[in-house]
Length: 83
Image (cartoon, rainbow, N blue to C red; front, side, top):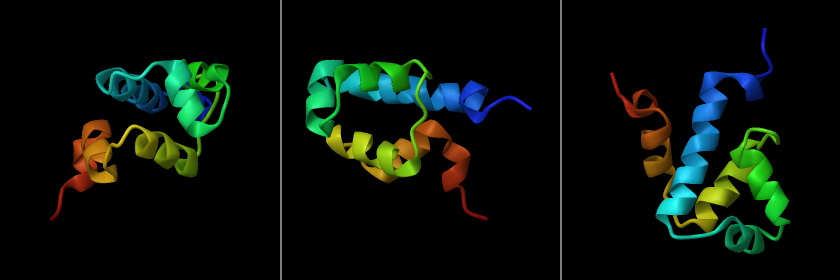
């Protein structure tokens, strides 16, 4: 079984976080400053080298002014489906 950071699902998360940052017109360095971390931290999670937990994901999307529901809808729309 592959590590979760090596799965297509985790790669989709990394790609989405990078895409959201770019859509916001924010550089890795600017985002890192907002988060209080080194720029390398942002680079590493965007490239799947460093894992983020849910608290860290929330901090990133908050720093990019992305609402959690909008983020989840883009990550996996099926999560928001109701029966």
